[in-house]
Amino acid sequence: IRLSLVGSEMCIRDRPWVEAIARAFEPIPFEAFHRARLPALVERNGHLVADDLRGASSLAFRTGDGDGESFTWIPCREGVRIAEGDRDADTVVELSPETFSEHIHELLTAAGAAMTQRAVIARGELAGWQRWEPAIQSLCSGRAIYGPAVRRTLVDRDGAPLDLHRRFTPRDDPDEMRHFLATAGFLHIEGVFSADESSEYGAEVEHARAASTPGDPFSWWSVDASGHEVVTRINYLGRFSSRLQALSHDARLARFAGLAGPRLRVCDDRLDGPMVFVKNPNVVKGQGDLGWHVDDGLGGHPVMCPLVQAGIQLDRADAANGQLKVLAGSHRYAKHWIGWGEEGELPDVALETEPGDLTIHYGDTMHTTPPPTAADAGRRALYYKFAEQKTFDWIPAHLSLIHISEPTRLRRI
Image (cartoon, rainbow, N blue to C red; front, side, top):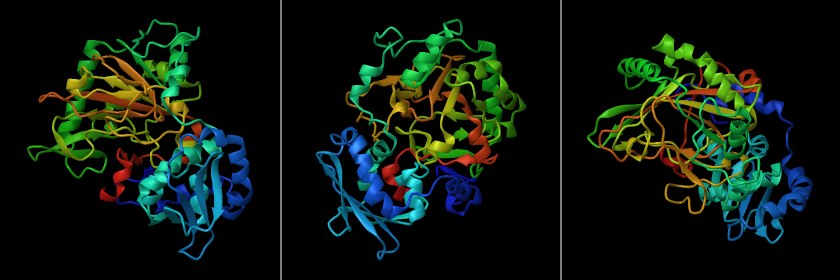
């Protein structure tokens, strides 16, 4: 699961509340799944993955420390063929039956299992497992795999192609905004907050920035090209600003985040609480520039999602200042990890915003904040998360998220 107490050194496998979440989901017996349930899933959903798996190497799961049961997943015309054993598999993953069950339930991703040492790559590389992950999710959930064909689904209520660069205003038809958000996975609303409010919030952010120091477990620090440590994210801003904490319950945030669903409530005391991203130029170490990612990149999808991010823009956002970019419609699909420059024909949308604008996006919408191109960049954006009651029931207060933007490089983190 993609959650941890403060600091990456505190491993999620030691958290009893995480174990309680896993126990709440029906166990998936390792052997019975491979012998009976998986063939049925392939018969039902194999057509969703056959093209995606073309050319993929084989993957095996093995329980125990080498003496347990093992099965190899092999691409074929029907999608997947299952073979007993793992002798000829290109990638072999050793894990417990419990961890395998959590993986199938999407409580734990390949990256999350490897990072927390719940799984060991006994042969091959983590990338070999991740190559299969969208297909595994697609087979088990029936979700298609994200690709250029998504463009056919990006249409308005009349069936015409969406203008993915559209900017709404607070006065626009809420049903139209609701449809856009549900379809594209993001929303840009101009002028939700006034210039004076943006300036006031910016001053509060600067107070928090001055009060944050390297080593603070609730903030992220990076290193720039000159060797200076710079803060790139401050979580739980209420530690420094009662005004930014109170903003959690602003009716405007609730109104527009609520377009994603009537049962969402603000995460004012968990999942990082009120937080701010600060873009710095020339970051060479740390997570100041997040690659393409989703917010449940280590797991926890059925517990955390739907998760909505409401972003109050305090500065102009463009390529020079390190803007937010999204892959339209990706929240509705299983998807591969990609790097900058690998977008190809995917609908890659860069959001150009002004101070006071509000952006809304799902945590499962693949998004990124590339390095700013300007030497004096310093964009700041406040974020308030919204989730359903189940998230509050399962996840204790005052936790911090570990964001992994480059899952294929987990060994170096």
